[in-house]
Image (cartoon, rainbow, N blue to C red; front, side, top):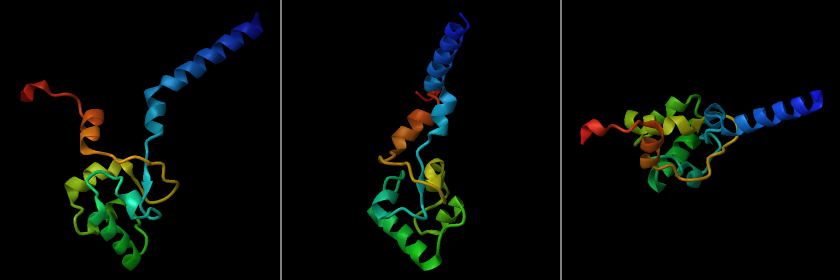
Length: 118
């Protein structure tokens, strides 16, 4: 009976952990801007080929980014653009971002619906 109870408890815990929003947040997709090439940088919101090339060139001329905020030193990355990028940017570790992030995805995912604007 104890073994069955322990097994059932383990199954319930495993099932809950798979659906937990906290764990989903932990698996946020990020891009290491110090290691990414231009095509990977273009996966970030509001970053296209020209801006990704400027980021790579800036990194070549100035060395690795010390903080994510250093992206704002690159021409074309202002506060608004950086605010959209920030959740997906890292200066160390492994890059896990593999798909283009569009602004519409960010607004739908992170912003609550505001029906009062209609």
